[in-house]
Length: 273
Image (tube, one colour):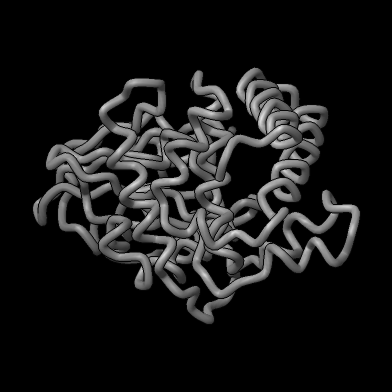
């Protein structure tokens, strides 16, 4: 997680570059949600309200901003629109977004947000991945966690995937619609991968494997998985999250590792899919 910086602490040069896009900023509110951006703020400007996020250009994660800018035209209206992109202004890479009033989705059992989340995951599952720079390949992302090279091929596909269904990345709007934010890892692969990623997140929020899969089955793409593919991916995710938690044992990563292990174990005696 990057240390958050306030709008007022940016250099005059950076603030002036942003205001050249937005008009004068009357008020700025730092946003606490999110893990990956040093700058995250809602600006009240002469041209209306805008959300901005930024990363220093010398930080390795700056590439995620470039990916998000590249993929954004292809994921509207499932995601808020990128209005402008400042690639390097006094050491900052800054994205300006359409402001959407909303809150992070609630994945807990019984949450009324769950149907909304499934709707947006389902809509994305029908989206073909565009040929833009920075898009990852699912087979490469998970290859090191799969033993049999033939099984890796199960992950191939032409769908556009989000893959990071942290509840903070699903915004439930004041209109009662879920929208996907933080496109740091756009990926080309099999469409059924995204509902699988959601299963683990739901389990980390209190669902059993059976409960989480019962929700995932509402996504049409779930049913396109070839025989054995869900088992392969569950095992790969368990290994991946274990690796992540061992290298950086933050509580939320340990919780994700435990959920992924639980799902992989449950797939050994699977419920009907």
